[in-house]
Structures are given as C-alpha cells and as structure tokens.
Length: 354
Image (cartoon, rainbow, N blue to C red; front, side):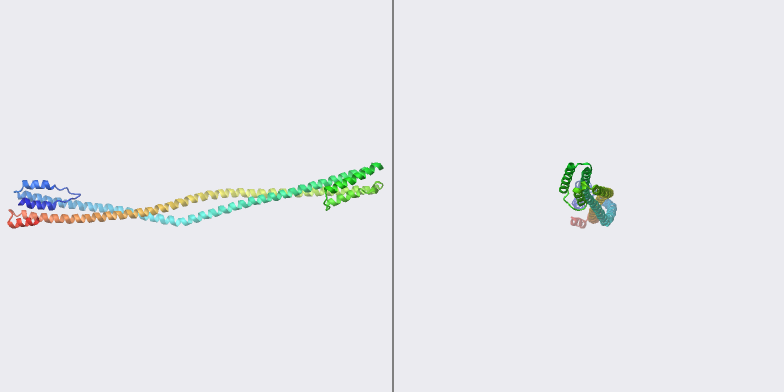
C-alpha cells in the first residue's frame, strides 16, 4: 500500500527544470522498494526532495535576478545607442539643407565664372574679327595710296621729259601722258578725294601749251609734288592709326586672356570644391540612412530583450507555482508518514492523493 501511495507522490513530483536534476522515477521507485518498511528513510528522501526543490527555486530566482540585470544592461545599452543614433541623425538632417545650399551656391558661382569666361572668349573672337576687317581696309587703303603715288611719280617723270625733248619727242610724251591718264582712270574709277586730284593733275599735264610755257610746266610739276607730299602724310597717318588700332587690339586681347586665366583658376578651384561638397553631401545622406537603420535596429533589439524578459519572468512564475504545489504535496505526504503506521484514514488520504 505504501508503495502505491509513494508512486502517486513521485508521479506528481516529476518535472523538468533547468537548474535542478532530480533522480529519475525508476531510481526513486527502486529506493522506496528497498526502504518500504523504513518510514524514516522515506521521510529523509521526501525531505531531500523538499531541499532540492527549494534549492532549485533559489537557483532559479538568482538566475532570473542575474538575467534581469543582464537584460536591463542590454536594454540600457540599446537605449543609449538609440539616443545616440537619433541625435546623430538629427544633427545630420540639420546640416543637410546647409550642405545643399552651399553646394548650389558653389555651382552657381562656377556657372557664373564659366559664363564670364565664355563671354571673354566671344569678345576675343569679335575683336579678332573686327581687327581683321580694319586691317583688311587699311591694307586696301595703303595699296591705293601706293598706286596714287606711283601714278603721280610716273606723271611727274613724263612731264619733266617735256623740258628736254624735241618737238617730235614732246608729242610722244604727251601721248604717253594721255595713255598713262587713261590707265589711271581705269585702275581708279572712283572720282572722290585724292583719286580726283591725281586725275586732275594728270589731265593738266596733257595741256599742249606746257611745251612752250615753262612756268606753267613748273606749276604742274609743283602741283604733283604737293599732291605726293599730301599722300605721303596721309600714308603716315594711316599707318600710325593702324599701329594704334593694333596696339589697342593687342592690349584688349591680353587683358581678356589674363582675365580668362584667372577665371580658369577660379573655375578649377570651384570645381574641386563642388566635388568635395558632393562627396560630403553623399556621405551625409548615407550617414542619415545608416543612423535611421540603426534606430530601427536598436528599437527592435530593445523590443526583443523586453519580450525575452517578459517570457522568462512568466516562465519563472509558472515554475514557482509548480514548485509551491510540489512542496505542499510533499508536506502533506511527510505529515502522513511522520505519524507512524498508516491508519485506514491515512491510507484513504494517500489513496485520494493518487
């Protein structure tokens, strides 16, 4: 009968725990079979079970306290990392518009400098084209003046031959002057300015009275020489004016080229700053994304630790209740065995426990 009662008790006491390793049911039964008539040994065995359960409860309590301390530390660390990530993310987001504004400003400066450089290049091209036109006009005018001077010199040379020539040769000379005049008119059809004066002087040289009037002849020669002097002065003035235009052109080109050299340096410097700011902005954006992910990770980590803490506390509570029930059962059983031989009522009580 005692064996049957203890089997019921042992079946109620067998449980699983992470901190106590109780003797298997088979070993307990063997022990009781050996000690079936030894109540004191059975009581010792029950009391040892009580000690083991209390020790298991104490160990579990200590474990839970230590575990809660660890989890609290982990949660504190997660909170600290979470606060740091939020703070860094906020700082990065505060810097972001400033970085974007600075980058846009540098880009605008670069565009302005580049546009200014391009305007200078356009101005250089325009000045060069303009200079080519003025030089072309000057060359044409110089060629015209040289032609006028050549015509005057040839006319003067022919007129001077009249002085020493015979009547026959004088007639040939007048014919040459006339031919020379016709060629001049063909070459210089424009009748304005010096062209008209040269043509008029050559026409005067064709007057047949010149061969007998030396005074008139000298006057024509003087007119040609004065006209040639005027053309020489005009040629000199034209050359000086063109030299001045060339000097002004070279100065303007040099000034624009120097300005563009400075602009090239400024554009290169701004380009380097833009690249640096773009890299800085990219790093800032990446850090914002990193800190945002860190916030999510630490929030999840904190939630996981809280769930673990809640589950372990819940498991502790259940195992504490189980151990309390086991200790209550062992106490009642101990009370039965400690009263000596079993009475019919005690046997009935133990049977009831089954």
